[in-house]
Image (cartoon, rainbow, N blue to C red; front, side, top):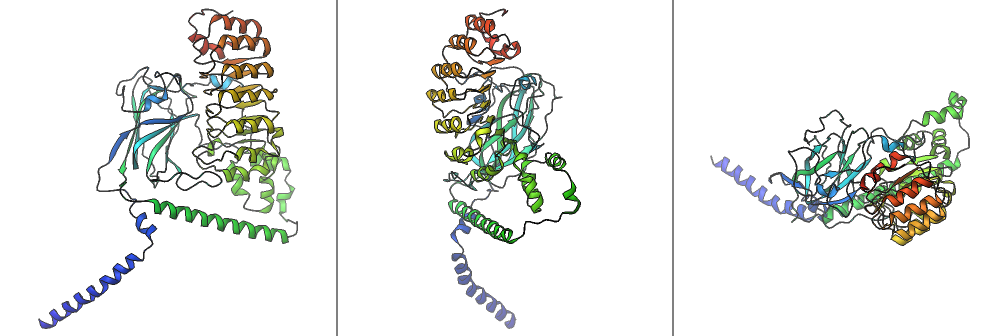
Amino acid sequence: MLSVLCVLHLLFNRTRRKEPFLNQRREHVPESQRDAETLVPQQCQPELSQYAVQVLDLSSQYGGDDSISYTMHNLAGPPNIYPLAGDFTHAAVLRTYGTWWDHLSRWTPGPCPDNPRWFQSRDFVELLFDEPVFPTGVSVLETYHPGYVVRILARSWHQGEEPAVGRYRSPVDRWRTLWSGPVDCHLPPNDPRKLSPSIHPPGFATNLLRLEFNCSLSDYYMELDAVVLHGIPVDVRQPNKSKSTEELAESERLRKKQNMIEKRTNEEEGKLYNFTKNGYFDLLPYELIEVILSYLTLPELCRLAQSSRTLRDYCYDPFMYKHLDLKPFWPSLCEEDLLALKSRLTHARSLGLSWTGNKGSFSPTVLENFLGGWSVSLLHLELANCHWITKDSLETVTMLCPNLRDLDLSSCDRIPPGEFRQLSSLQRLQRLVLYRTRINTESLLWIISKCTELRHLNLGGCLEVKEPDLVLLVLASNCQQLRSLDMWRSSELTEVGLAHLASRCKNIEVNDLIETWIQCLKVSVIE
């Protein structure tokens, strides 16, 4: 018995001697690691379900920005309609549906690089929530013609951190796809649906969701009522700034390592002779290789270029980038990626930058640095929902892209009304999209008096255009080749302006004006 007590006493003293050492080791743990451990889901807390409090961004909506009917801002707050179904004015409604929009003359990307098949999105809306949570689920309440939500994304949240502006995308500004799926056009149009798919955990907390839609197969307008974010709350009382600092340091370390590898590779390549031995591959005609590579997406081309020097030459050939659409890659595209593509675009004719560069991933000067030296031959440029576009960016476009035929500035809301006058120097324009911009009547009149080759003009939702009849009169006098005109929500439009347009513009397509004519209650028949 005495021996047992002695053993227990010895073990007790040894444990006590170890306690200061354990505490000492804990004190020497880097503060960033200790603080990083605090930003974890609080499993003891119940799951939080919350509705969106604000709509931050959108690509289109049926209602006007000065209205509360059929606007995407109706997604904020608790449901007003669900579980009912039907057409209600206080629902969130996109403006477009069906395939008839595709009949309008618009930029169509060329065959290479191919757009990813998984990217089917045509419209989007971004929603802000009060409390950041580790998401466990998302519920979308659809009340009319459901089935056209194709992707749900989440943006990372970090307390007290702002995303970096400029070349490198900060780890605190990450987007992850929580769910994606195909269009379901076989659902009953008058039955409500609560879309609650199984999501992929993003690995971070979020209070910002993005819903993307594809209504091209819909027979009518899709309507939404509310969006619910489910998740485990973050304990905001614990600091987490050190974790973000650690992530930034790790990102910088990886970037330096990548630069060293590229530098070493370039030095080794300079010592090699310009000689390749590729067997039967060299016997293939270039046209055949070009057709094969045209089935690859941009990321696939970049990965293939790393497999051999010969394939790199083919994948870097400027003729492979005559038509480039970067819209599918908006979540991860940063300024460094854009500038890395510059040397391959010397023969580019079409460039799509829609949806890119927001949330600080592009600096204000990126467009000048990117377009300089090669963009004289550019014919088509898409900049829809690029909120980093300013008056300086517009000046850059007009100076460096003088031969543009097609320009889309939809929802570029940072351009002052009077600065749109700069577009008058692009006198070869045939298609101009100014949907939901701040252009005023004076600037618009100046543009259409100079750009006489216009065939397609979109002025939908332009609330600063106060005299639509005068606009139609000038259009009829100067742009007689006009084929389609969109003046959505021009409530002051009358039969006088439409009569001028119909009498001079003989090539106008009636179907393209039907939405505008519906609003003109004074007009019954246009001959």
